[in-house]
Image 1: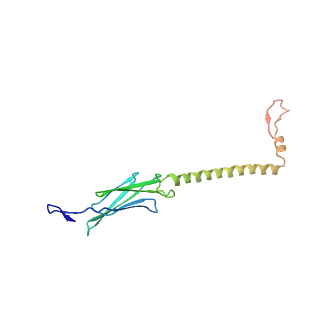
Image 2: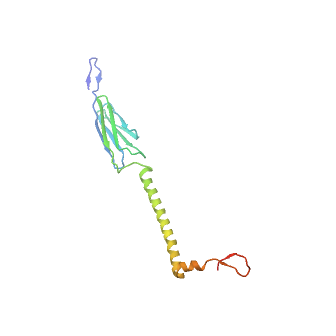
Image 3: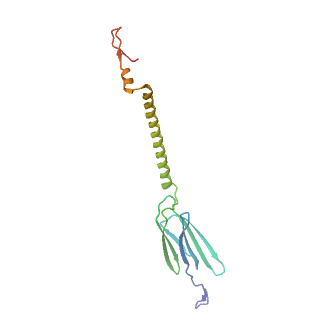
Length: 167
């Protein structure tokens, strides 16, 4: 703080200290700590962001914190740009590939895969059961070929017509 030539009090700008980190739930947090005046924070790519301001009344500095997440989108890299009277600063981080804020993509695809696999398994077991049931029925009757041949159509000889009968 100093006085200019006209005697007015002029506050010296204080550059903020800028940090960018990723939290456990996949969000990114950008902070501009103890700057004077307050800094402005922007994100690339834009996401769902919440910005908070904390004033330090004793010395007039301000801390700005912006928390951002990208719901349902795969975002491998993010940048936080801090604009301040004393200069601009940009930080970037690579978000963990295993941590994603998501609604559908990965977990939804896994659920679909499990459902398809389970359906396939049920169909396979059903077809197998039917096959083995028929195989056991043939074994109980003896030779299946003999069984089929005994069911050959016979013609009625007494009436003279040629209707097919099975017995």
